Image 1 (cartoon, rainbow, N blue to C red):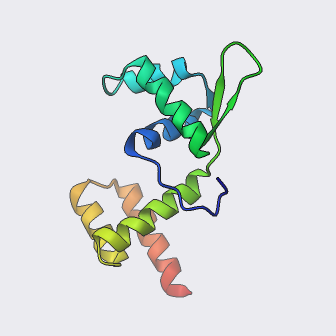
Image 2 (image 1 turned 120 degrees about the vertical axis):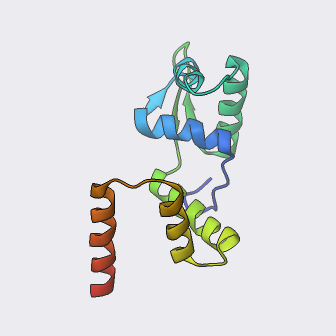
Length: 127
């Protein structure tokens, strides 16, 4: 799967990608242990998901040693951009402002985050 191909990872695949983006590379066991901290997950389910992800081109598996090592093949920023664009189009009728207002209304932003958002908006209006 090339980086220009639209990415369609499932929610479970996104959870695994988040781990791989943060850690760089992991074994199935390492991914499974991290997943288990937040929800019940069977080891074989994690293994099967990661095998499917390899088939889809979301991750690559290094099989040169007994323990297979996985790493993300898809770029985090491009994946996030694609998913946000899809959400804006499908859920918010193309309105980025509605997405932002919904997000800020549902989650408390820290003062630093709000300052960062204001600075970003100021830079956008200067262009």
